Length: 95
Image (cartoon, rainbow, N blue to C red; front, side, top):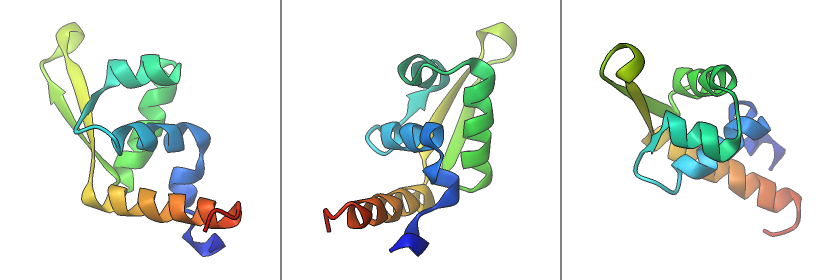
C-alpha cells in the first residue's frame, strides 16, 4: 500500500496538476497556473519534474512572448496517478 505512493506525484502541487491532467485531453500552462494559483516559475518547476519522470508531455507552440505550452498526461503518468490514488484511498480506508 505505502509502496505504491509515488514520491514524484505526492507533492501537493504536482498531485493537483496530475488531477487536472488526468481529466482533460490537454491543458495549457496558463490554465494550470490560474487554476492551481501558482507562479509561473513554480509551475514550470513542478511540470519539469513531472516531464522528467515521463508522466507528462509538453508541446510548445510559437516562439517568444506569443508562445504557449500545452501539457498532456502520458500513459505512464496515467498509470502512476491511478496507482497513487488507489494507495491514498487504501490508506484512508476507502479500499
